[in-house]
Length: 110
Image 1 (cartoon, one colour):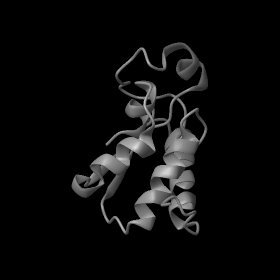
Image 2 (cartoon, rainbow, N blue to C red):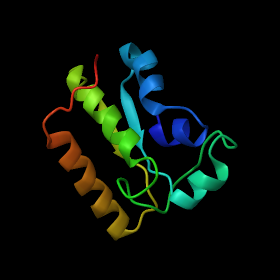
Image 3 (cartoon, rainbow, N blue to C red):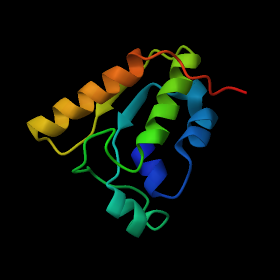
Image 4 (tube, one colour):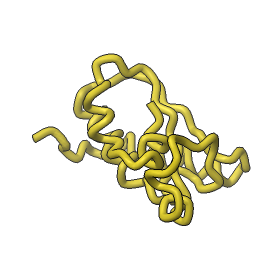
């Protein structure tokens, strides 16, 4: 699953995640630049990569909600970092993901 592609296609990543959760093994974490989201959301079906680090784009809140849901459902799959491969982007993305994963669960299940 790619929350970034689901988001840029105009859909809600958490709703999509809940529908596919029983089969989910891998999440490609990618954020979306705010300017791209404003211009292209709902018009594109996906993006190859992103120049914004994960946690610093328009999709950060959706990614965090998805991670919380996965923690709440005791998912044990794999996350991959999908960002433009600069040392700064990789470091910032990894630090943000680790902090969200390590944080206490914010309950998402009603």
